[in-house]
Image 1 (tube, rainbow, N blue to C red):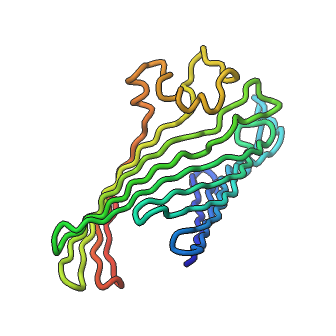
Image 2: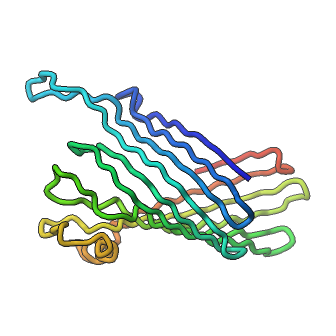
Image 3: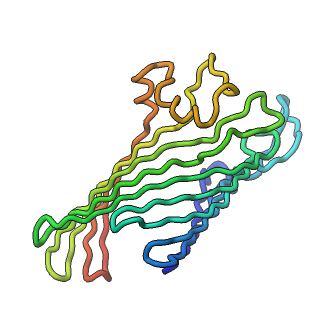
Amino acid sequence: HAGLNFSNMPMYTKIAKDINNKSMNAFYAINSKNVIGYSFSKFDLGEQILTDYTGTYLSTIHQGEYYHKLSYARSISQNIALGLGLKVINSNMETPEPINTIAADLGFNFRKKFTLSKEIDLGTNLGSTINNLGSKVENSEFVYNYFMPTNLKIGLMLSPAYHITSDINLNWDVAIQFRKDLIPSLSPRTNYNDISSFQAIYQSFYDSPDGFIGEIKEINSKIGTEVRINYINKLYLALRY
């Protein structure tokens, strides 16, 4: 099996016509247990004109960032899979010169289906990723070396399915995701040069200036749901929120 998709998402079209986020993803299943993939993503802020405080033209710049990523995933059992992705990143966002660096993504997924009755099944999907693992970013113009935007995501989706007839199914998905940035909290007393990338990961769980409440506020959450009516796997009607 193999797959390929492209995405082009224009942003802020009422403000500027050339701000967009483009991506391409491809995968190839070597066999039932091993999959390789490739991703390319580019965020472009478009053309920006710089002026001084009087409005006099100084220069025109283009800011943005992109990455190439090679991925490998392996199913280690009927229900569990692990994944690894390696990125090559280029960015000139808010920096006087382009930054080139590498980073890694790690992933875990657990899926299992339960039969609750003759008419009702329950699918469960639990996933977790650590994104942008890597060394601190070095730039000759920086006073400090800055951390990669490393983050931890944990998501859970429950998918009950009701078999109305042999041809018609009613499916309902409910998903929630939590995200925590794994970088030190901002503090006037923080000296980033004294903190390693590895130390930053576990320090990010206890170093908020606001204590435990501050750590809780640093966790972002998302929730989504979709209801689908499926007729013999050929016709779908879906509502998503």
